[in-house]
Length: 151
Image (cartoon, rainbow, N blue to C red; front, side, top):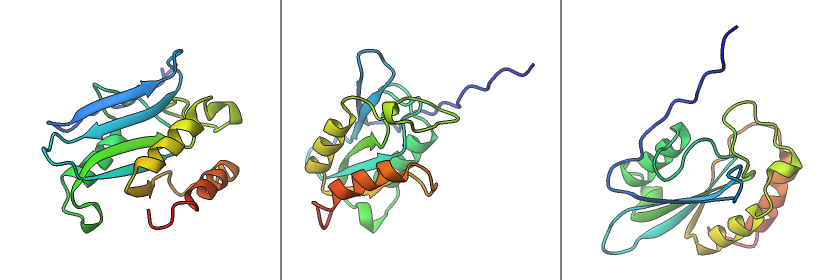
């Protein structure tokens, strides 16, 4: 019998300051913050993804590393002068494969962290993918975003 494969681990880019907020039980990650060590602060981006995988303060995952490179290495005019990337999720439940997106997987404090992070952001990036699922949850977050035109 084949054992389930472990997710491939990635390193965070060098020179970044990483912090994370987890539930006391460790089953939910509410926030992952990635900052440059620039002297002068720049823009803050809030990226809203589907659900967290294994990324934390010491390791990244494929999606987080992609966003780090997009924000801090690529010369994209959309993300000029970004000094902080805050990653939140539609669902805070940590799961790498076969994610279902049940209501209890949103997480008890997730909406609080979503709102707080959107409030602080200069730019909001919807990064939850193009799957057709979870439409009710997506719609509730899109309703929140309607209060922030131009972000």
